[in-house]
Image (cartoon, rainbow, N blue to C red; front, side, top):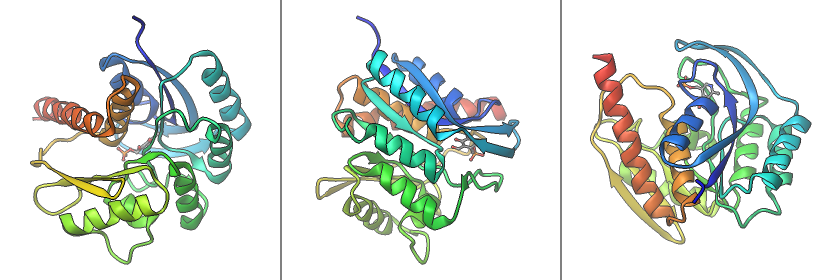
Length: 252
Ligand code: PLP
């Protein structure tokens, strides 16, 4: 039995900490085969993003179209999209493919502070919400605050749940809002179909990049293997936890 294919549309971080190299690493290690389209090229080391350029929307669309036709992906993961034109090209391409599970991990800003979307915050919001229609979305609290235009970042599990439900109300099939930026122990909340489930975690003090990329890619692998959204989330959280634990060992 050949491994299922997962199609990734995301940014290239040449240092491999995040972006499509991290996605491909996670996908392969979980028993699926990654095929990747770069939406943006970043100039980046393990320290910081220096600058970046979006890839031509037509090139992104052509590449993804060819892979969709010839590689038969079982799930799609979308990370950094770069600008509104690329988002529109992807939305047009994927519109007729609502049969495939799609996971959108919005990317607005690097931890080093560089903005990773060219355009206004409103355009970024519209672009990621457009792509998350009928898809699963996995924002952290900063991204959630931006996507929902909240006055302040959710501060507790109840506010995280409220935000996850609000993303579903805006059209996402499911929303996993990651509580890693909460004070104290993190809680992730999965909202879908009128219900919400809390996943409590304990904080791991690790110096690790690309955890969001890896989590969303791992969820895509689970769905490609035919798991339910909930099963895929449980397995992906375990996978990232192991990654963080190893990072702790590497950096201490
Ligand atoms: N570069 C790319 C291509 C990314 O996808 C991301 C985040 O997802 C980053 C840079 C930023 O990563 P970090 O927040 O670890 O700096």
